[in-house]
Length: 308
Ligand SMILES: [Fe+2]
Ligand SMILES: [Fe+2]
Image 1 (cartoon, rainbow, N blue to C red):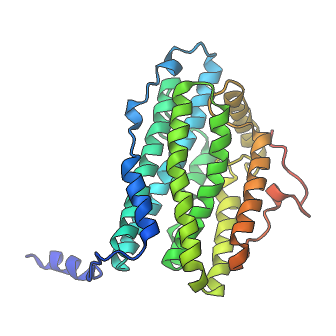
Image 2: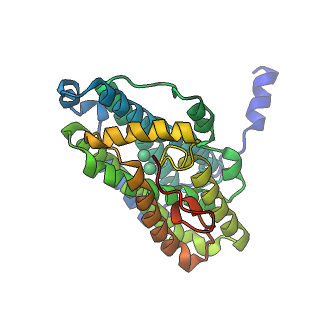
Image 3: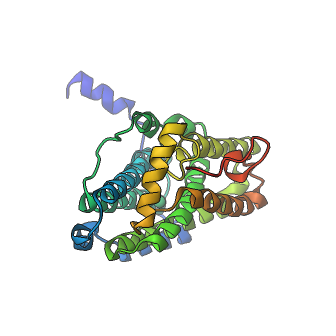
């Protein structure tokens, strides 16, 4: 063995003991459901979108929207990969590692379903066409933020976002008038329900052990991610700079008008506000302080709920 290879081996943390004994029955149940409910985005028939009589502008708007969703879903996979590494070297039991692997696989298939919709509408955009989005996308996942928290606190932040995006996706499912988009949304929602359920298990099992300092960090990171990146065009367009906000909101509204599984920008803020209220209620028993989100919940900084 060459010296350089040896160095690499030594630098890796020790994975042993590799735990096979089951510790969390409820997490294992989610793993079993994930196995039973696997699905294949390439098997969805997207011909209804290809054949649809839609104006070119609408096709482009729909493709832009579903490309954005595809990037967002993809953003969850590097986050998952880091969590998997943490689970391995933190000697977590098998079911925790299995759940994280399922999470990565599921987010990747949400990405696939989304880019397939964009392709069927017009064309998937592999790179954002707006400079602004190019700057925002790399901030979807900031590993520094995750590493600042304990393993389960970091997982908890993500599952709070699963709840939010689940509420938005539900509205987008209801908006969809094409069978292929409805089917994709329905299957994605079914996966997301498990991710939300995992968050509830994390809260129930581990929140009492998380320090007050970690809880404060958790609330801060949640607010930072929401305000700094997800309200910049992903969940809603409220925090985009004015020109990009107008352009993005118009495209989003057009996609919603034609039932392409989008939400009108004005409706998004209300959905997020309601979901936030639910999340605040969910974390209240564990005293996790979530800072105010004025652009969604309204407050001293003035209402900015009208996106377009
Ligand atoms: Fe997803
Ligand atoms: Fe998810």
